[in-house]
Image (cartoon, rainbow, N blue to C red; front, side):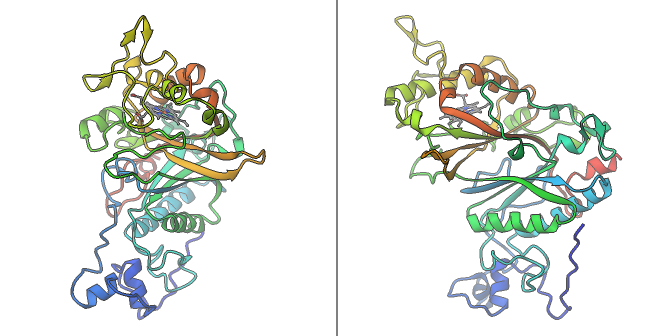
Length: 419
Ligand code: HEM
């Protein structure tokens, strides 16, 4: 594994607390005005405090309950080793790197040294960067083999997702031994973070696939951004500020096996292309009936009863929310496990080669048990959803995101302590 030595002399070494912007000032590279370095010099700001930083340490990994920033890159990696100690060292290094980057600092103690940090985030703020790491089933066993002595610790929640009707998955862009969800309000901060993790993984793990995405900026007064079908997305979702709801739906409890996943969560990632040609050809009424909500306001087609769209509402024996409407089929009222926490981003990958846009939704959903939560919902959607004929699932992944890290600890520590 690449454990790049810190080549700085003590004199060169910036204080551990300096932020990326602080470093810029410290290096004398110039900062117009109002930057942390100048503010600090004038005694107006504490250069060790990055106001746009999301705390890295905690009971749960950040990037799950955190309000989604504007940009994401979802990246998966394959291990180039079957040595569990090398994987542990990588997770230790990623922990240290993630703690620094999310705090608005360089990837290592110095970014003035060109070899220590790729450098493209110099002068940029933390921008609410979060880095959320997950482990794929292939770490535990592959083709029935105990790949690196971890098979006994594999969560059954990582059982492979079944084939869903209409799936058109590209194996090269699916799965992976490790995943990283990097989110921030600045696309270059996101890129830099992934770049730094790719660099620090050299020799141990290689990038497998990535998907970047964005959230539509909210217009004033609107809580939810619009997806590329033009509808508000995320209206009926688990409220990440509601601890009880998060415990019911998202966080693995101490009663579930394996215990190393307590306070962690499972992530389902799907790259879903939206066939915009056929979608755009629908009338407004057709689009609203397919979703079950109004395009303009996001209100359900039927009235709310106890805060939920009334799925029983009918006019002249016709269901107001059609039987194949997306929100009816996806609704938790259908008797599945608790609802999913959806944290999706739109993507636009240019032209598809046939004169069409290659764009859609990077569906990211966190949950306690994908077999009870994602699978039954997606089975229903795949066979009946009116949106389905306008969608194509092209990539898929399922990952176990271990609990958060306490200072001095590292990602998935409890897994390795059970070895
Ligand atoms: C490109 C694909 C998709 C699009 C464009 C889409 C769009 C939407 C929209 C516009 C809504 C209504 C607003 C809201 O409550 O958020 C919604 C709701 C929902 N979607 Fe999707 N969705 C997609 C894929 C999926 C998938 C794959 C799942 C899960 C397997 C899913 C699960 C849900 C759930 C659980 C709701 C809330 C239903 C409720 O409780 O009312 N969606 N989606």
